[in-house]
Each structure stands twice: as structure tokens, then as C-alpha cells.
Image 1 (cartoon, rainbow over the protein chains, first blue to last red):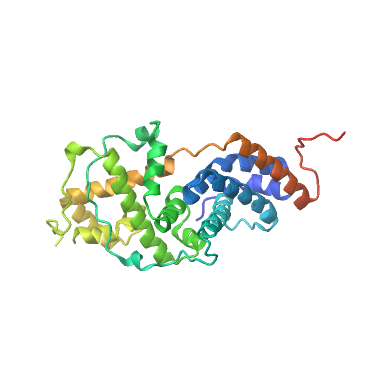
Image 2: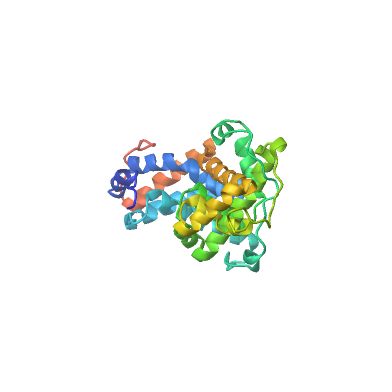
Length: 211
Length: 90
């Protein structure tokens, strides 16, 4: 069963021409969409353009929105389209595809820094420098991995929805998501991990009872 | 099962989207492999942190520009005045 869309009522009101209802939706999502855009295009001005284009497109296509997806998911897909357009324009290769490269099949990024974190995520979130740290880690992750992670784990799209938004196969999205998660784990653990309790990676052993 | 196998299945495992038979093997491995246990925990916390992180606030100038542009587009799209008008006709 799909969870009901918390925005359904507001979206219906907007579709009948209620601008105040639409503005409420914009206020709710402008921050998250701006954040997503900044993390994809990595430039504030380009991110601003993406935000504006996203909500303008939303108005344009609102009448055709069939509520098959949640409003938030729909908006994320529109924003992703605009952000990808910016990336393509920047590369000045209009038809560049984000799809499979051979490096999707390279060796897995093996965990090197393994340690319990010193703090609970709920406490870390409240620390001032956390957002910057999270963004710095994201910037070190290759674009194609980063995009899947942002859509799937930050925005909460399903793997299928994320794959569709990026125009890649579901299998590809899964591999990229795993790589992104492992890379980010490595980067964040170097920061939040407890050095004193660091464990040695042990890639090849068989666990007792697991043989 | 080896650590490498756990890594390959780590997505499905942390998402709880895994075949029960494989899940049992993984859990057996985790029970005897502290590094893997910590890696799984680290991955879960990494996701939690990104999911719960605060979004950036829109710069004020952008917000003003955005809402003005949206009101204009709304007028065109719905061929009517937005219900909350900012400008007064003289």
C-alpha cells in the first residue's frame, strides 16, 4: 500500500486555480528543492535558477499532475531534470548521458576506517558544522553516485523512481547507491568515528559459523 | 559467507529488502564479524544523518524574485489574477 500524499488536498486546491494553496506548497518545498539543487549543481547561482525553473514548470504542468506519485516526488523529478540540464550545459555536450560507465563494475570501495561513531546521529545533526561536513563529503563523491544517493536516501524516492528520474536502469541505480553509501560512510566515519575504537578491516576472513 | 558478500548485499540489508534466507546468512556473519557489524551501523547512521539534515534556507532575494515570477506565470496559466495580489492597480 502506498502511503497517502500529505499534500493531496493542497495540490487539489492549487489545481482549481487557488494560488494561495500553491504558494503554501512552494514555501514548504522551496528550501529542500534549493538544497537538492545546490548539492547536484554545486553552484549557488545555478541552484537558484533550478529552483525557479522547477516551480515555474510545476505551474505549467500542474493541471496534468495525476497524483500517481506524491507531489514531493513529482517536484523532485522536475528539479532533477532542470539540474541535469544545467550539468549538461556546463559540459557543453548537450547529449551527454549519465548512464553506465565501466567504473560501475570496478572493485567495491572497501571500508578502511571502521569505528563506532563517537556520537549519536540525532546529536550530530544539532551541531553547527554538520551540514557543511555533510556537503563536503558529498562533494567528494563522484557525480553519478551522488545523484542516486540524493534522490534515494535524502529525498526518499524509491530506487525505481530515482532510476527513472536519472534515466538509468534500476540495476545501475542500485550499484551506484551502494557505492555512494560506502563512500560516504568512509568519509563520515573518518570524521565521526572513534579513533580509539578503530577496528582493522578484515576483508577475506570467514566468520565462525558462517562457513 | 565472506565480508565481500556482505558488502554486495548491504543495500538490501540496510533497506530491509532482502530474501529471508540470505538475511539469515548475513546475520550469522555479522554475529561473528565485528568490523562488518560496525560498517553496517555506520552506513545506517550515514543515511540517517543525510535524511534528517536541515535544508538550506532560500536567500531572501531569490524568494522574492521567485514568488513574483510564480504569480506572473500563474496569471498566464490560469488566466486569472492570483488570489493573493501583491500590486494594487492605480
